[in-house]
Image 1 (tube, helix red, strand yellow):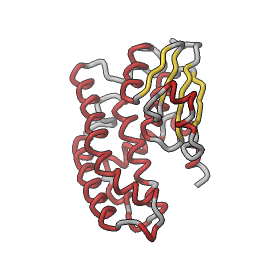
Image 2: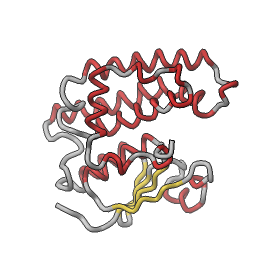
Image 3: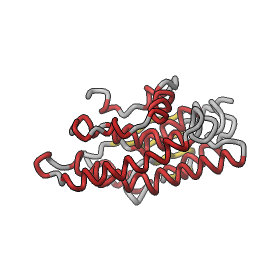
Length: 221
């Protein structure tokens, strides 16, 4: 089933939270109006955006007169609001697979993000001369340890049975972490990704709509 009413999608290039929503919109083949905001220009602190999300973060969607922020809530909303759209459910129809998808999302948000966050802050937001090498080394160890859980749990093509919101949650996080190798090659984030996760990432990248969702500023680097 196809829908014609366009959803306004407020995004920020490189945000893994916005990227999961972007992938979900494409998965559902929903018409949307992409509104790419600039972090550096302060777009998230402008009055018009604060009216949509007082927390000043992306993503945000506007569906008709309904405004919603927080990526997990948005993805669940899209699945329930448009159950028959596009490539099917974002959360598996089987109860136990759906529970696993939700568990993986929780693991990614509550364990993987805290593990990688301090490390990526050092790499992306500080001059090389000011980076805390201890924080980076500790972060890489924690990141690799967390990836081990996902590597061992990945027994099929995707994380929770069929392609789901779980895959769209984890993939942008790993893709973002891999960007650190461009700034600090000796960090070797690529070396922390096991063969199962590597194959899984390639399957995500082979999706027909994947390329359209790649953060725009990444395409020039």
